Length: 293
Image (cartoon, rainbow, N blue to C red; front, top):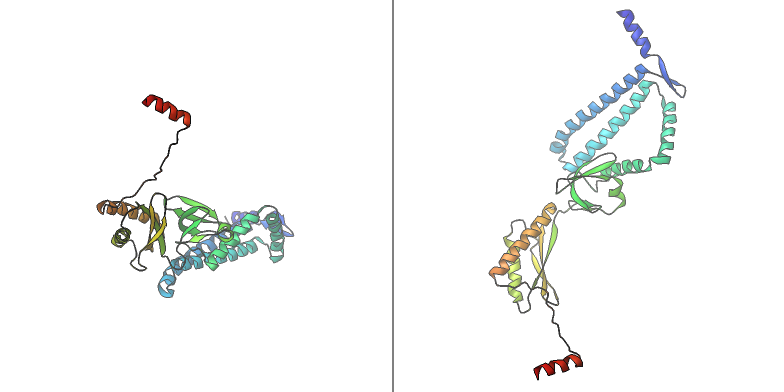
């Protein structure tokens, strides 16, 4: 049995490929894979341990804790990859040759991958966007589920996962509704008929806002008189909320309440009206007179 084991070890040590001047054996490859897998396991254990300690002891926000965990994951995996390469038999000089080939590949076709990876590091370090933020990017709106090496996953209000390249968050304008102060102001326009009591309209709109539990008391709601339009007096109810992801639902609820309140207060919402003046030609007027005669 000992002889069989030695033969097995000898087989594992047989070189199967040469990288530069380094001979790579099957045993070295197995060892490298094992070391890399161990680094992944260590990364998960460290992240799990830090999750409890960071959120409780250091009192970090969820977004900051997520960023720290991802950065530590990349660092541990990076050193695990270097150690795995050394287990194969690659020294720093051989690694320089490998990185040289990788740099050539980047120059020819991996620019986007590299750009997205670096953008992901910037997102994790600078944190203009963090996990859990409600954002709008590329005409898509949703909550950031996670930030990966190449892309960021956004979960929309329709429960659809959208994969957005990290570079989009760095190169393009992004609206982060959760950044800093989460309060936003809703604009609810409405038109009333000419002759309406504007003071009564204003009081009705403010009452609608105050009765909605999702509207903030501070800052207070307000009503603005926008313009004298062709068919209506246009006003706008301004109300504040600290739940940006619910802004469309809240806007709908306010519109429902405005319609009901206007009906009870007998305030009319007009429809577009046009006055049409008909001018008959002399021939048509003469025919009309003949018919009357």
